[in-house]
Length: 198
Image 1 (cartoon, helix red, strand yellow):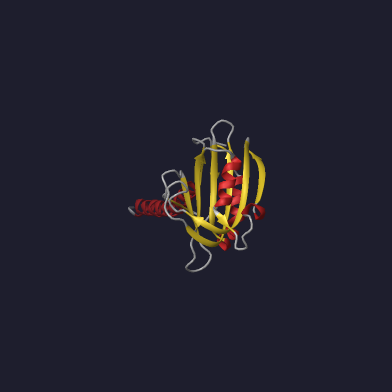
Image 2 (tube, rainbow, N blue to C red):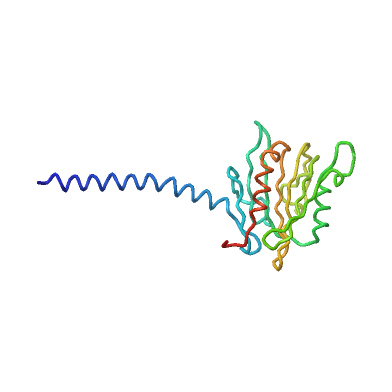
């Protein structure tokens, strides 16, 4: 007569174990998704970084959000994407980025770069694509210190002009092959810009 309660207890235990087993991967997936999602403009707009990108502690205090992007090849620097708000006109910032690159043939970087304008979530967005030798300032462009020349680098950057919360800068740079592999992911992330909560 005691077998039935024992069976009920056993079934309950197995069910509980199964629920925990299913819940753990779901929680891990949610944690990963939360790590990829971020906001700009005082939480006014939401974006989500591509799968495989790793959110890390910003190297500079002026950077709000930072991701490390898997490198292409052993011993190759990983890619880096920084997100920050900043002042200055769009063109002034684009020109500053052009100045961070040099061309092996001595030509003007802006002649080899491309720019594109988009309208997303009520914001004007300028996307810039630059290649060449990058003058890397790991602590940030305004921190001072000696820059490191990094040949065959590429930068994909987006300037988001919000209607009333200033401009925000998404800058993804790294070895050319690394940026090329993740270029579509970066563009999809930018084009996925939506008002927060949508």
